[in-house]
Length: 396
Image (cartoon, rainbow, N blue to C red; front, side):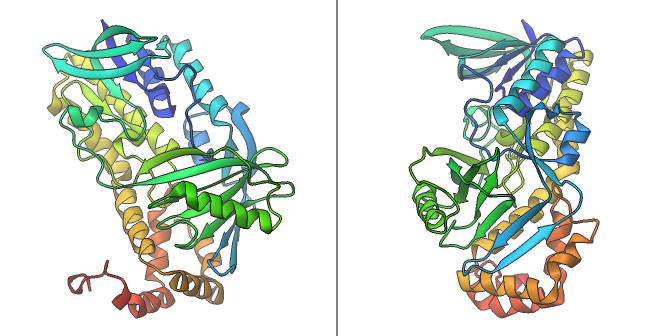
């Protein structure tokens, strides 16, 4: 009998395990894959604030990010640059493995290659049925944390609903000699509803990828052809990896004896698709609430609802504003996106926003709201209104 069973050994699951084991609770981490971090489809860009807050190891850092080029459908370029480092590009295998190592040092037990088939809450325990190399095994605990990443149905089977909107992605490692800064490509013809990226990692290597509302693999193939023709990458003969992220939070992230954290709970920035920082925050808060619940012997849904109240206070406003911005962008045509780039360039809006305290790598609501409140942007959106069904008459 464990105090807590953690399902998933991604950043959120590892951190929750470490925090709970550090409180002298007996913790087991159940991971489907044979290694930690092996299933990741992620660009691995983590903000400096996240590194500082959680005292993360620098051993996973591949490079630093101070600037990025934003490229419109027609090729217009807006460059954002700061003197200070804004984020680190990390090796996710090393990053996740280090978090797991710290959890093990705190006392957490890891069971790799262990696929969770079923979870059930009954009486005084949580029972989790698993399969390992064809053999079935049941783990039992007083509580559980679901940290599987997006796409797992376990929360739904426990009555917590399912994420209402998501987007799919594809990514590949490419040879890209000479690439020095991240490039972001916008346009519905490039990545419908989202954007594409080319991110330098190690010398001569980069990650090219995108999220889109449909056919991410096909769109990535087209993007790679475009990058190859422009001389930015050496070959299009690369292996794709696929994934998906939630754009909205789970309807409920708690029930009796069980909490949901990270991507599985929808704790992901809808603007950029980044989920590491928000997932670690969610895991931190989950460990606090579970620690108190285990100590008091009260693992009821009412007690564990404090977790949702806590994470909502920290990030729900960000998620709502980010989702609004994502939906608005998804309704712009390529011509309208180019027009927005023109406005940003002609008004120096990017420089203005960079000087604002609200312009932050991990917290985007201030940046979004400042941008939308700018006179030139408001006027342009008003001109677009008839072609944007997102704005009904009642929205003004």
